[in-house]
Length: 206
Ligand SMILES: Cc1cc2nc3c(=O)[nH]c(=O)nc-3n(C[C@H](O)[C@H](O)[C@H](O)COP(=O)(O)O)c2cc1C
Image 1 (cartoon, protein in one colour):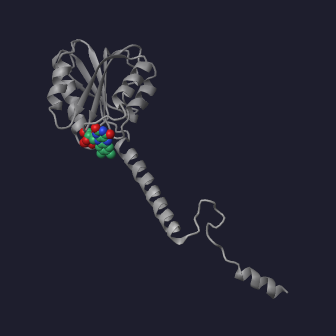
Image 2 (spheres, protein in one colour; image 1 turned 180 degrees about the horizontal axis):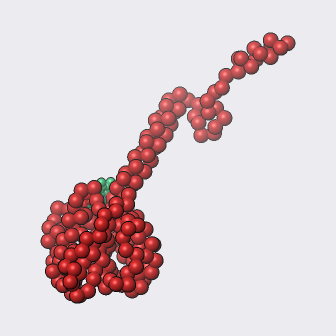
Image 3 (cartoon, helix red, strand yellow; image 1 turned 120 degrees about the vertical axis):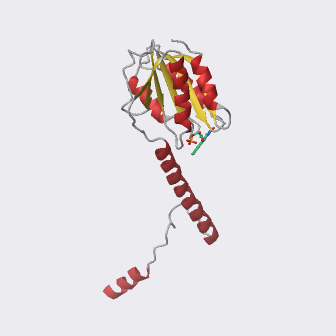
């Protein structure tokens, strides 16, 4: 008797996924579904890694241009994978400095200033990597809390498209935080972005 029970148990096979409703019975469907699931998991992992690597916070010491400027502007930017975002940001900062501003430049990290009381202008720039406002910039706005009406310039740095209206969404985030939006500028690759940034900044007088 004991032997019989053992034989029954031994003869029982586990048929993987048989009781799962979504798991198909036909072999070719199983293969297709397996391929689809593998591609899905690998895709999610790659997108997650890209999102993490391109939008991880990068700390850098605050740099000051034109230390004796009449008023102080704070420029916070997210550095991109290449130096394009940095060059765009520094072109804008140089334009402000030549217009008479003292300019403090920080990267968007926990080390960037959160007390804006000594600043008269805030500039926020980030490269678009996922059609949306840059998370390190929006995190920093949250750290600041209330922008208390400070004049704010938004620099949208990108390859040349903004299908989900990242620009409009960032503008709204600034206004919702009580910032006064004075200008939004696009710096797209391929044009003369640096010169345009410099010229636009030099029109803003302290
Ligand atoms: C993963 C990834 C996603 C991107 N998504 C966009 C996008 O949605 N719109 C756009 O105009 N540019 C997009 N770009 C281009 C960057 O915004 C553009 O190259 C910009 O200069 C960023 O600086 P970088 O070249 O240093 O990465 C993307 C680039 C990468 C690598």
